[in-house]
Image (tube, rainbow, N blue to C red; front, side, top):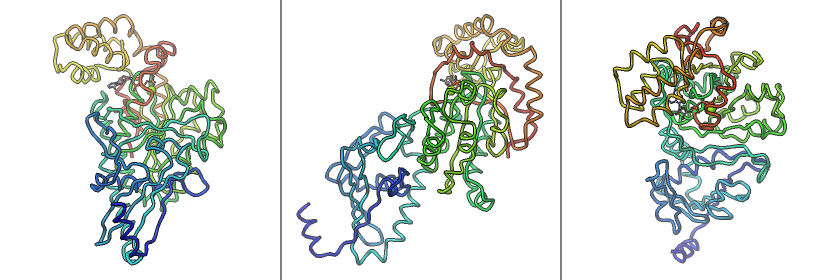
Length: 455
Ligand SMILES: Nc1ncnc2c1ncn2[C@@H]1O[C@H](COP(=O)(O)OP(=O)(O)OP(=O)(O)O)[C@@H](O)[C@H]1O
Ligand SMILES: [Mg+2]
């Protein structure tokens, strides 16, 4: 085959176009490279390259074909045949390890006679197909984490496949709230021109707040899965300065969810080198506005009580979602999904305990149900015992309730609070932290008494 190609090459004049992974002299990823990669990996001809790498896909039984290093793949467009050469220094593993892929690029080889005719429509075609693939959400999502030491060309992200199975459907939260979040995300995605016309950065920020184990991280995963977006999980303790935070944001790709977990804790403990003005700039996303593509930002915290209100003003945070401890409705949803029971003779007893103000986090209840999944009665009994011993008084009473009411009145327009849910740093501090802080709970009816609905 090589010989045949060489022979053919003798009779044609070719033109070469190179699509490098990183924009020239910067550590910013070249978005075209990414789209191209999606496109090329969707071509059936990938099987015909001389060396194809097999990888597991989203599900363990899926097999994905990946172009091997220094391999060529053929494509046909409007009657012309073009060749894409995947140029990389090391093995495929280097593809996600920026230190090594200094010269990673796709090189397009096409006949000079074809170039004028097809180049433009061909590139448009690649864009369209890649966008389609991304929208269908069946490409492999990735979870990026920031590293302390910058890699090649100052790239500070490391990535692994993002396989969190959480979806909005698996979350026990008010279905009305779920639907509003979904339609909010959808309408945001459609609003590119609208944002541009207003001269605004096309981004949407969410604040998820509530006690530990109520599903905030799971909710982030559900959002990413719903949108088909990669997740950039920012660990504030690994950021040496404000400018590094800016750089990190610049190095994220469009169509991604950028997450900062436990923001309140970092601000309170001052355990990050990021100043509050650095944080404000980051939230405004001015620096990333160059690309004009959509980004979703999510901040999680246990309580917004001690956080500078400036940080949470509308525009910086567009949507507030409250994650309360479990109430009886959420308990029933969980009993249904974890134990497969819709009704049970112990339910009235559970309901009464919830009414008396006891509550546990969905994480605690979930663990009890999983541990006793073979016997629904035993599971429900263990929840009752746990509610009676650990959950007393957590959910009601005290001055907290009044404060929550006041908060809600202050809620600015277009802001919502309600119940919600989780995922990236799973199970971390699941139980311990909650008991430590004994964070307040507001009744889940809050979400329905919201002053103004989600825009
Ligand atoms: N509303 C919920 N519905 C179903 N499962 C839930 C819910 N909330 C929490 N869980 C389960 O509890 C576990 C922990 O949830 P998660 O990590 O999302 O909590 P969190 O709010 O992020 O906690 P933390 O504040 O400690 O980070 C997850 O495995 C998740 O499956
Ligand atoms: Mg969490």
